Image 1 (cartoon, rainbow, N blue to C red):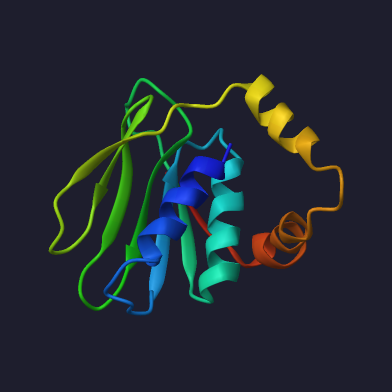
Image 2: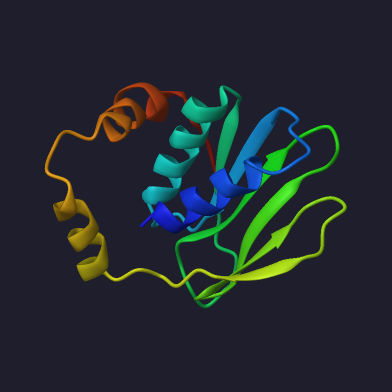
Length: 138
């Protein structure tokens, strides 16, 4: 369920300015454990503190609501604005609405079954990343 989020965030960081990220924040509903996985992946990839804010936002859909990457020139924000659309905001760039549909269980399983070898990144996220995530619940 994180592939689209990870792809978008990685693509954003491949564009200038090539400044380091100093911290990151993931916001999600409390009933979505993948948010903690995304936070752990970001922490391992970026080497910065990452918080995971679990909150009831009053939106009609659950899951990850957004990711904010902090850097000196300004924050990068990827926020779900509808169940299948996310908005990307970056300093000195136009705002973009991106197709990010919620993936079905069938799609997720099909992706997993394409690779039957051990997933080393997932292993590191679970063993090294998750224990370090700061979770705020409200």
